[in-house]
Image (cartoon, rainbow, N blue to C red; front, side, top):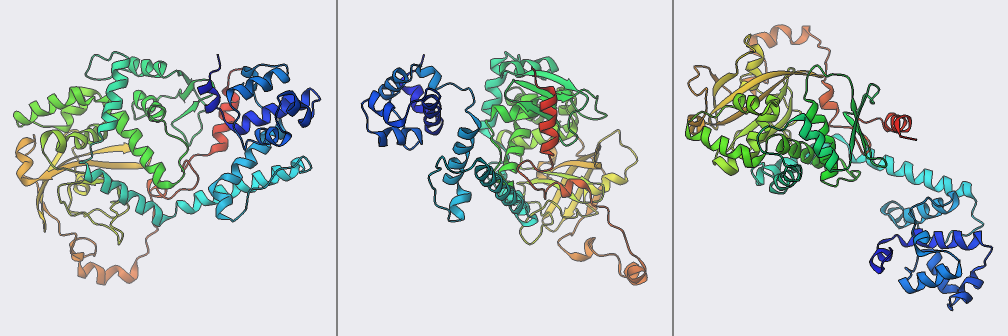
Amino acid sequence: MVTADTAEEVDALTIGRRIRQLRTARGMTLEQLATEIDRAPSQVSMIETGKREPKLTQLQAIARALDTTIDQILAEAPLDERSGMEIAVERAMKGQTFQALGIAPFRIAKTVPDEALKALLALHGEIERLRDERAATPEEARRANLELRHLMRSQDNHFADLERKAAEILAAVRHPGGPLTQRTASDIAAHLGFTLHYAPDLPQSTRSVADLAHGRLYLSSRVPGKGDARTAVLQALSSRILGHSEPRSYAEFLRQRVETNYLTGALLMPEEHLVPVLKDAKQRRAISIEDLRDAYSVSYETAAHRFTNLATRHLDIPVHFLKVHESGTITKAYENDDVNFPTDRLGSIEGQMCCRKWTSRVVFDEEDRFNPYYQYTDTGNGTYWCTARVEPSSEGLHSVSVGVRFDDTKWFIGRDTPNRGVSKHSVEVCCRRAPADLEARWREQSWPNVRTPRTLLATLPTGAFPGVDTTDVYEFLEAHAPD
């Protein structure tokens, strides 16, 4: 049943075009319709062009004059192609792109050819695409990373609103607490109105594809060599839970990705259940990232992330987190314990070379990959203790490490390690330059061919969804959509 509130929520442009479509289909002129509803033709024209939103009483009069119902005027059925193009152009004219170019909105007369409207829409789309590319310059990406890291540090890497979202979803599916099962992940999908479908031809550039029109979530049917089947489902659903729309900038894309990963971790390792576990471990002086990984059946990286989310807020322990590629490049970083990581001139850590003496680099040289590696590192800013592991990924090996200041080491398993290092990466001779004798011998006699990991290039992408081939996605959805 249509109410006054319903009528006010419907797009005025669409209502107007549907009225005009129904009027012309019945062979009625604008003047005739105006006479039928006792209004001036200019008023009806403003309604049909979307410049005036009709009241419920006007809609009722128009529906009677056109021998139809309000429901049909407000129906979701698509308009004819011409009306759809006119609405798209009018919306574009009201948008930032046209305004930035100084193009004033104009009336789209019947005499304007369809080809002209198509050309305008194509040009508008291309301008939008180029704007997206410019927004993802290397400097913009670094600035976005830096701003987000400052935000994370300001709130101790803890997002209370995301923790609440996770708790609400888990309560809705009656999750009893503790580790999340794959069946519960499926229950969350059903609660959100999605059915899960596994396809062998999922686009290579995606982890999942959601068909919002039909409530279908597609995932790869191929069993991954590494990974968690629950994670792909929860990451896809997290975007829907959070109401994400197409990102308008690289900064927004990055924020959405962080929120998605955070909410996924909060669903896999619920705060309400995990905090008592962490407090008990601290009381026993037995905090261990490995124990968290095993207790919740997650990856070491997920356990490490989750610990950094909760350590400062609930345990009063400042921490730092590093993910380093085997090439030595830092790909992820977080710190609120005053650790002095290398940065570029903008202050960004991601993309910098990690000190060769730091735990995250030293761990690659360890033959024992079964047990965690612990190390104390003396720096110009004090002594830090870290625990680290090496994990494989599609981009090669990465180390994941979590560390704390010396005074907080007493709460952790591994504090008795004999491993020590000295890192003075703020001083160039620490590791950024080779020893003088080696440099003298080889500087003029060497020429390395750089192999840049794709994870670095992925931070400098183009398009609204960086790294995703949208043509592949659309063709995939077209092929798999139900009849």
